[in-house]
Image 1 (cartoon, rainbow, N blue to C red):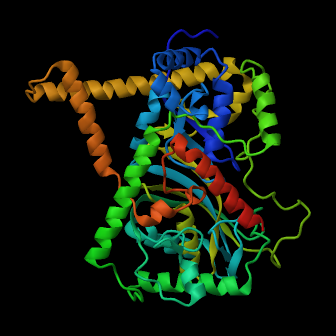
Image 2 (spheres, rainbow, N blue to C red; image 1 turned 30 degrees about the vertical axis):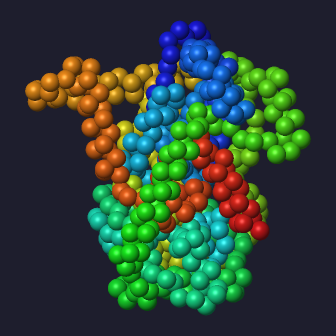
Length: 485
């Protein structure tokens, strides 16, 4: 396939289970870099670098000198999750921030009867509950309290920090939590129980690992505190105006430094090789680049390719007696900042039996829909450029056309308003105004969101810049290591 035009923009891909979002980008680059489709984009980048001054070239580190298709993603998906992962290519990476504020649709499977420290099936069991009275009608009644606008508590034990310290550390040290736990304003516009699995009719399982008794007590104490706060009986003081001001300043400083870090990165997702063995693997892969036109070729296996523990053996006995607990498949449409795993956990608490997230699929984010013309199947990459090439080009062109139409509409509005600038300036002003409005619409981040590990993000999106990609992988590896131990 020969492609003379530079193609760039935004499209979506169906992320496989067990894979990190950053690994998906690396796999895409393995196919895109040697392709004819993106050859003009790489040639354009090389020409731009050739025009750089010696000072600019010197400032460019070894990693940045590597010529790759520039990519990023518009919202992290948990390794346990599958579905829509928005990817930006070239200049499209500049638009990824806009996808933070859009609504998303998820489907999740809730498994009842036990709660884990991570609120999902790959954590460690903290407590078990009686599920004999958990029925479909009882579940549907409990779901009524999760519709509309409400304040949601983020996952506590595995994610939440306060003044740089995890909440369970306060409990371990016997110290009071310094202030109330920050909640998030969320909006659930649609919530439907689409399928009910009676005991013995599904294959979902609790994790086999249970936390130590001491750890169970620590986690339970944090959960009890959160429940008291949610019920209006806070045991921790709210922030004073001075504390709020100091925390806002700290957050603003963090975001400013993060933006500066992003500017220093050219958008290449790469990772350092910390051992001779890993360097050798990369050198071999570089010597024989992947031929994107070949059929059946798989990308090199990266450290973010399989971040989930292996499933139990088919003949392994279930971790319960009898038929076991029921499960439910729930579909929801939510605003940004929503934690699906928190809904699963809180639903179990409301029913008095405990629950965890067993599956998660993001079927829609903004205008990108799973199994549609603007969402690529990951398996298409292995079928060769003749298969994925036309699809990716069509998706990028579709996004570019929609963006151009939107900008053209805004330009017309500016003209009708009697603006004195030129048409080109009017269009630019419309773009700036549009970006400002979108930025204002994004809910303010909290210190909780800043401190949270990307691997635990399911509904609460976090845009990925190339500077964050390696950190995301390290967080994912640490989380999985903790869970496997």
